[in-house]
Amino acid sequence: MTPDLLAKLKPIQLLILDVDGTLTDGLMYYGNSGEVLKAFHVHDGLGMHLLKKAGIDIAIITAKQSDAVAHRMRELGLTHVYLGCKDKRPAYNELKSKLNLQDKNIAYVGDDLPDLCLMQQAGMSFTLKNAPARMHQHADYITQKKAGRGAIREICELILTAQDKLDAVLAPYLS
Image (cartoon, rainbow, N blue to C red; front, side, top):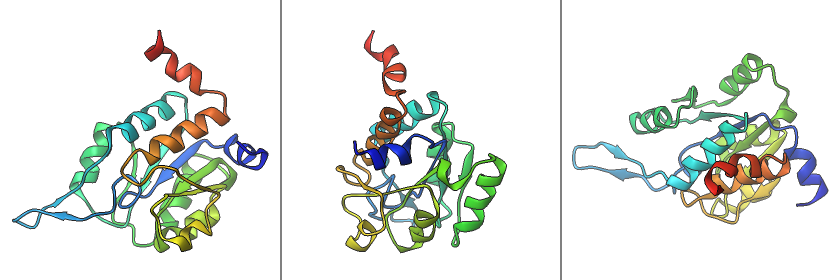
């Protein structure tokens, strides 16, 4: 891990995630009745659990209004869930104020142009291996794994490693 990356990751207290194209592979699945189906990777869910266990908050800000996303976030125990945010900045600023954080304490994961404003504002920005090349130009870190395939777990473990918290949260699984 480079010194610059370590310096950006150490103060992170909140990880904010987009959903489609970050927690999911970005494909849109429609059932015969028009219902939208989404697939979430279990490794990402456990990574988020580990991050929360280490005292790092997680929030979702997504442009879509989705019952599937709301259900999955309830399963994960996330309380900061903002659905249907075409402009994501008000939700970001509300979280920052409510949690008494500065931009340097916030990491943001985005995959496409609607996320660019928050990637530029947050202290640490992530994008995914399979995000458009333009997004790679604006990210502090590009995951090795693809969206919906464990990339969020990769990010969670990176933050935990930088903050020397990974061994502690893994200990119950390894003993």
